[in-house]
Each structure stands twice: as structure tokens, then as C-alpha cells.
Length: 79
Image (cartoon, rainbow, N blue to C red; front, side, top):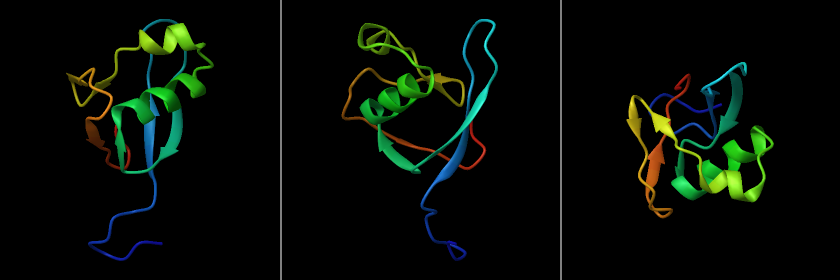
């Protein structure tokens, strides 16, 4: 367990998709690249490689950049 002020090892994030699928909750590291996030979301949603490349990821109301080396900082309970 992380002490106050420390970065947690993982955060709980809710994945939501457009369409008739239910949201899912996953545990992810708080800091990761867009490429890693895209791979993990694709794995959770059981998407094949061509579909993975077409994912549009939105975090806190903003579309994440297409650059795979860009980093995202996730917070516990984030969508």
C-alpha cells in the first residue's frame, strides 16, 4: 500500500465504449505511454491488431494524441 504522497503501483480505471457494451474496470499503472494504454484496452476488449490501430482513446473529455510515445497520467477511478 502506498503512503500519503507516494505514487500508487496501480490505479483503477473504468473503460467505456460507444455502443451496447458494458463498462469494465481494469487496474493499470498510473503512468504509461499511449501505445501501452492502446494495447491494454485492445486486450481487455478482445480486439484484433487492425482494430487496435483504429481505437480512439478519450481521457477526461479529451482525445489522446496518436503519438505512441506520448505519456498519460491516470488517476484512481478515472474514465
